Image (tube, rainbow, N blue to C red; front, side):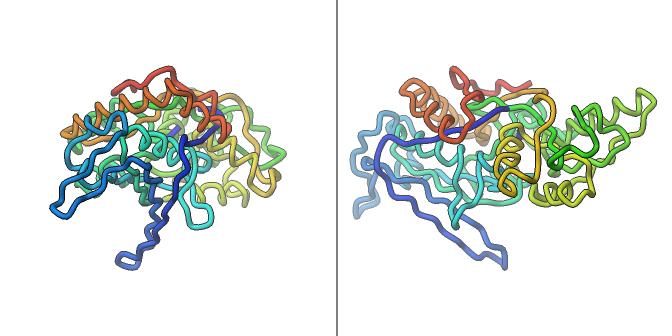
Length: 320
């Protein structure tokens, strides 16, 4: 996950369905994306009626018949994706709804842990993963931090640009100006993210320069990392820039946190797709280009204050 401020809007009036499913004692929040007026419906023999959405015919038959694309997400990153009143809302769900208008299907979001999203995708639990996931070569090739092969990796359809930001308690009591000021200090972060990697990179730079390493405090979810900073257990937190900006704007009525310095290492967010599902990947790229062209993409970003993260066109595997 990692760039700016955010947006949202859909072209038609729709009905949002939200499901809470208890599985093995774990509550999974599901945001059922809006169903387009033209969405395919099954006939008695399992066939589908004609769908006039412009890209429907390019979808794999599986999705034409079901009318659903299942999405894995980690709904803890407002304004990109979060839970409000039992619904998963934000930039990503609204972009998915706009994509659904072009594809003639609905996108059904289910929230789980961020570091398990790609595994869940490649085991078939989800059709795609959409959760502010930074597209990089490591994820494309299924490598761990040391370059060891862990899996086959995923393909990405890039749709947004974001960087890493540092946030502190309101008033910035330690006088942190940038990530370089975290040498020898505690910094909170969510495990398995690219901004955890940014802290590890900075920590090495600290020790290479004769200073103390960053005390990296990694947590299962971002809420825990935020709590750590608020309590004073860490002098700063590191997050995606749009998430940090939204956090500073809203938490405690704007009185809990502030963003310091500029975002760094901006890179693309991508919709993750199984490498074997190239037909879905390619039509998703077409759909992203279509919502960019008709303006609905920019409306979504602007609604959420993320307009500066807009890209001019979709790219497959554009991350480095």
